[in-house]
Image (cartoon, rainbow, N blue to C red; front, side, top):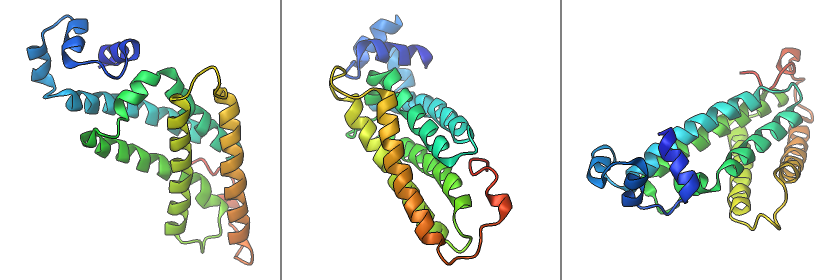
Length: 201
């Protein structure tokens, strides 16, 4: 799978099955024994890429005791994954590839859970978990949509990864921090042990 990912990285997301087989040094018929069509190939590459991305984001979510720095680390990590290979990102995120949406949705839900793990310890215990899940979905959706536009933009005019990560962190954290402060007004104090490290499960 690593070799296939490398070929997509070099050749682009529009590579045909025949071109893929040629680059792999095999025939299209043999390739079809493993992948029924290009969509199946995209799903397999997506599982491989998203699995690795998930691991990096978990590490980022545990990188600091400061929740704002943790958010910045996660945003920067995600943008770094996108930046590392625009072609691979586009290959596994094509919206018309409905079969891959299951894998992609699972990945998104797992990232949302990481964000919930950062937010929940900062909130009063009376905060409904469902409310936190909506906030997490909004955060992840914002970053994902921005990353998709960023990677498709002209590299000569788009902001650097670091600048965009800083911008998104400000948007995400300032807004979330305001919600947290508002939600915690008049609520019971947050237990001290919940403040120690919001990034630790």
